[in-house]
Image (cartoon, rainbow, N blue to C red):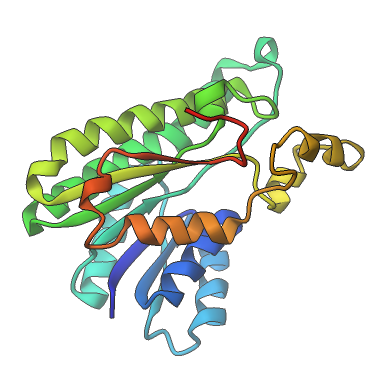
Length: 246
């Protein structure tokens, strides 16, 4: 057994790809989501006996909810070695039309949720002397976004900065923190952002002329979570088909 991972927002989309990749790599996977029914359904599909999957409710906007989810997983399996901060909401809105409440809500889930996860699990990993945190950022956090709202782009840019801060501060305790910044992925949520008649033109703007594969992003997360991945601490791994190169 490779260890235990908790994936936030794991019930669908990229979260499901992450869950499947870690499960396939031999991890016990805690599928956490505010949509508990969806998490339960995925856990049952992957492991009907419940030996290597566990659905747990998690509201990422609450530090107490992170603590409760972590404690539930530890009670079931004894420890957690990896956290993947993936939970996200996306709202497309012209920047001048974003309301204060909407801006706050997107940052609350995307950015605050990542901060709370890093903090709660950072303390736990520090006590254990080992841990891996993988944050899901975005190309939008690097280029300001093109198909996403300003609040989404700002939250993802904040995640990149938080990744570097936690990577620096937690490294002395055997903890590595890294991020992945995907470009547009072949997911229903991404396709919903682009009208069908404009999707082909959007793909043509990507140098490799294709949407990203969520399974590849998930496999990259598994790699960054490995015990031998310490030297990738603080890295932000770009996977955008050549849309943004540094």
